[in-house]
Length: 369
Ligand SMILES: Nc1ncnc2c1ncn2[C@@H]1O[C@H](COP(=O)(O)OP(=O)(O)OP(=O)(O)O)[C@@H](O)[C@H]1O
Ligand SMILES: [Mg+2]
Image (cartoon, rainbow, N blue to C red; front, side, top):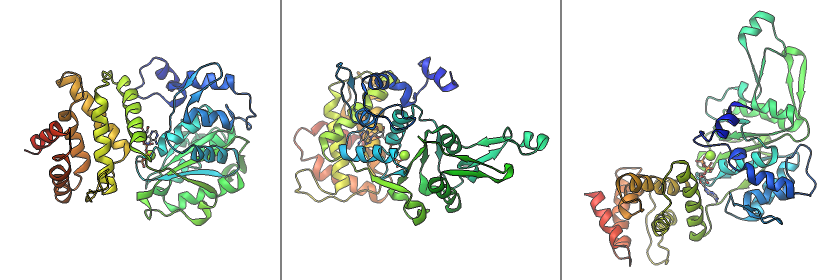
């Protein structure tokens, strides 16, 4: 057992890895899966898609949906991993890029922990290899003194490696990925050796739309990727579904009570976020100004989780307008000057007039006071 498996098995991990949190589903899928599996894959592409999108197995086992969105997107993403092209998940913040990449790695390779976190300071060692300097000084360069990166390990073992926030990585470090992805080899000149990728190796990268221009992907690197753009949830129902599902999951981890009455409140948070994001009310009648924040599904999830915690500790356990209003305010008002005006205008023109929103309007006024 690895350390992470021990922590997860003890039920102590604050956030267990996908392959542990959904171990039961993955096992049932593997048992029911009689389709051909690419080399070193734990499941067939069909079973990986079912794991992500949810479904019912012939023996009645329920597979919960992890990703709510177009089926085709998931199928293209999974198929890409079975080819020699890498996968790039692109989208605005909070569209489940990281979430999808974790579940893909868990379902395909049974391990989502081979991960490179991209930052402006990501060194080349993070995508190639480094050295254990004590051993290097004592014995000179040797295979034992070499510290492989997650990418190198994935190549050697035929696994899926994840690269988060690819476009934040400096251009010269990104370039190191080009050889890896096109030649499928990682030379180690110090040892006169190379590590060749074995079958089953592939790479899932995520990048944020808003970061475009920070470190543009070179066209040479871009060509090595199939790009899948993850959209914002298409309908309010989808978004309410995603938020309530995730809140129920994190709520369990935090011992928060699940309150079905809270669904109305979740619907309200989603409606507000969507209207402000789209710049128009749901009925299409009133144009609105959009605030500077992204107001993504991810933010709606944290507003509701925060509200539930407030309700649990300081209220009667039921999510009420007063529990979410501060969270909404925090998400909407990023720029204290302009966003506050936009929010006030929304409260007075939309919230005030809307049927059934009296309580919420009152809560908004109290929060502003
Ligand atoms: N379509 C969706 N289906 C399922 N979950 C979703 C969806 N959209 C967002 N989420 C939820 O939103 C949360 C945040 O997603 P995630 O962190 O993966 O976003 P991201 O795209 O990586 O954002 P960032 O660009 O900020 O890194 C996750 O908990 C995920 O469950
Ligand atoms: Mg992310």
